[in-house]
Image (cartoon, rainbow, N blue to C red; front, side, top):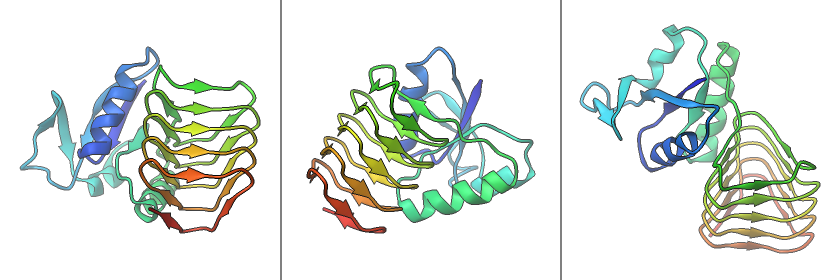
Length: 180
């Protein structure tokens, strides 16, 4: 299945690596607002601007934009138009069969989601993230590289957990919080 990436910056490039690590998916190209000046990224074509997706057929997409409020608006707008956002995880990630990973979730290299945890739609988990048991992550969160989230923690919608932060056992992070 071809996946088209929205945004050709740093996160878009990570998504290329996630997709290339799998046998199930392949990169179809990028949509980025720097088109037509930007023609290719990592040898994949930039096919148009993000707004051009409104006139395309129904595609499988991945959001390469980190900011939670933009992830949410893009996900919701393009889902209504019939586009699909499959969950994508790097082949080196460890996902418990007893965890739940929803549509549009991205999981980077060497990350783990353990037993009883739920990662809701549109969330982006970068590299080397450890999500322990029974963690609840609401939609559209961005979890930076090296984050550790303790058992029974809860992250509200559109949280941004910065590089290397810790969320402790049973801790609750309010919706929209940026933890630096």
